[in-house]
Length: 291
Ligand SMILES: Cc1cc2nc3c(=O)[nH]c(=O)nc-3n(C[C@H](O)[C@H](O)[C@H](O)COP(=O)(O)OP(=O)(O)OC[C@H]3O[C@@H](n4cnc5c(N)ncnc54)[C@H](O)[C@@H]3O)c2cc1C
Image (cartoon, protein in one colour):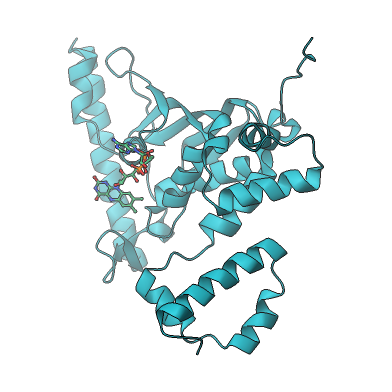
């Protein structure tokens, strides 16, 4: 007879269920449901490795190993379902993450929320010079205030026109098309942990637009409490780990002093130290020997 299973759960995430985390001026993120926890990642991984019961310490080590070696499928065993309220222009970026399930409020069926997003004066900035997609230096307070005023006027006017069209009996699916992109929408969004971490890497990065990053940061805080071992492994091996080209890596490895290196790598766990040393030795061999 097989032993009965208890449902895996995260007490830390249970405590957050349904709570509203405010984002931007009218947006929010709420955790609706989830499946699995760090133990579910370990449980799935042990199917492939066939190992028996282990200590908490080795569970943490296994998660670290999986993340370091991009053995990603065990992380797909956990899922998170969120209720999100977000401006349409943020939703357009967010929806590009295809490995998720989405159900959005229908503006054909119901009347759109009245709120629209307005940036704070401090977040209004000039076009960046070195990044065609990003923001650069701050603008003077007068320019920021007049930009926000224009945005407020067009958004308010578009909303009044929308309300007027509805009053005139125009179909909701047509009345909505003149609304501005900063109008808020809502959706339920469900995603597995592997793809969620991919979303967070791209959208909490400094290259992402600040408004979607604000959501990624809030969701990141939730994930950290939900799966703390996975979060620690991900920040160490993915989020904060540099990504180098082969050429940059060879150039860098060629400057490393073998004696200083032995001491510096001593701080790493044994297995990671060996793996790192193997990489460096291969780079030296490719350049004709140690520097
Ligand atoms: C800073 C930034 C700037 C961007 N600028 C632009 C832009 O200017 N224009 C624009 O159009 N987009 C832009 N994007 C969106 C970007 O190109 C991706 O569409 C988005 O980040 C989603 O990434 P993804 O496809 O990896 O994620 P997901 O769609 O969630 O997919 C996750 C992973 O699943 C796999 N996968 C998903 N679908 C397929 C498929 N059909 N075939 C094979 N593998 C698949 C891939 O491994 C993928 O990485 C930008 C994104 C960022 C972060």
